[in-house]
Length: 342
Image 1 (cartoon, helix red, strand yellow):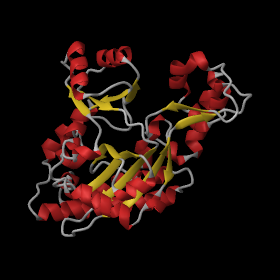
Image 2: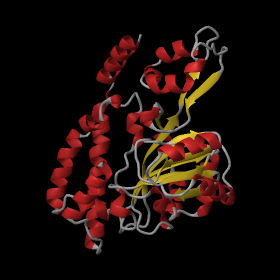
Image 3: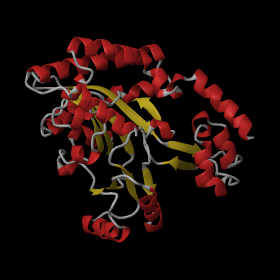
Image 4: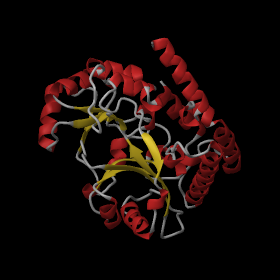
């Protein structure tokens, strides 16, 4: 069976570009980055895009330090945990912060869903604490129904910004038909089957269970494409009210001009009013306009969007550089790159 799964997954990855390796998808963008670097006379020109964020938000920036810049009303309770903190002390810190279970744990420096977990109890937290050898964050779990990735940018000489992308995140979820087992439902879904090994480790004891007709079971509650979440094009949600809300939020973050808010909200109506919003992360220059991973989005159209965003990144970085922001030095940039790769 595992041989069949590997074959089917290989075919899925080959024929659907959203599953292609990052390096393959980004090869044309890499060449464009080299061209922009020549124009800027710096390989690390993007570091000036967000002067208040380490390396502009591209190379090993701290998620916690970025979150600290956001108004408390728009973010969940979050703790920074050094790798040397004993577990007993961690439990005290969580209690003092008012964070209960379930909660989210994730590395302070990380990307694409690496080691992001929803933990249900102290035993799971202790296992995560033992296994994690880098500083990590413990974050209040926000149980709001909508999770979005919203891309915002503003040119330094302009008072108002732009929202160029909204991705609606649909978690990896099975829907029962009253006949098929969980194992059969996973095998019938390309997106779930690609996560088969991880799902087998976590839910193997339930694989023989039959989900009743219409019942849904969310397998992965982490809104990351690499973890099986489906990204849907939500650009129809962009309007003046939404832009006004994120202009207001962004102007309080000094030195932020380009990036993606990953957030949860109670409803679209409240989102337009600036209410019921919790920003889980703010990603800087390394962020993508995530709506391009909608399964209906063509690769050609995705490249058009990516090239446009890199052009915007270049223009914002150049404007900030001309206003006095420094580009990351060559050797300093190389050290930052190798540090995150090690």
